[in-house]
Length: 146
Image (cartoon, rainbow, N blue to C red; front, side, top):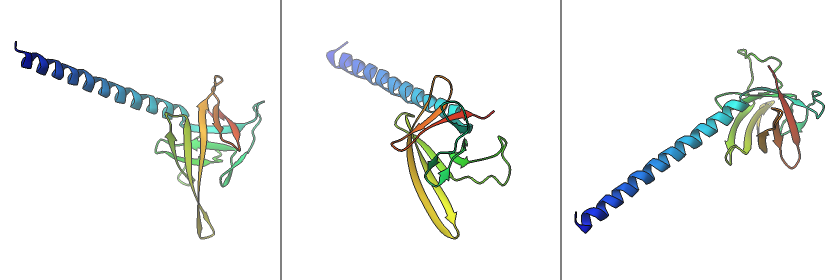
């Protein structure tokens, strides 16, 4: 083999390995994103430290419970775990910063006036399985509603 062939072979090998590493990394990250998203989907009740139901205020809401939907919409204060045709979704949500924060984009019709709010929280699930939403104004624990 000539020096040119060796150089071309080494370059091609490097590009193949580099491309495979990028594919693997992006596929793994997407799986992690979906895994965390799947963990938070469903209905959660806001609770105090001693697991008593509470209704903290954030954005437009006194939130006694929140339900995360797979289409990235959410509803607050739903009375049942199952959905009905009249479920009113309050807006959308988006995970950011490697699933360490969530942004809620809320929309409300206030007697013909459309009001919008954007609220961001740090999000996590603690060792007891509680969903934690935290920002400078709030620290809200949520217990999954079965």
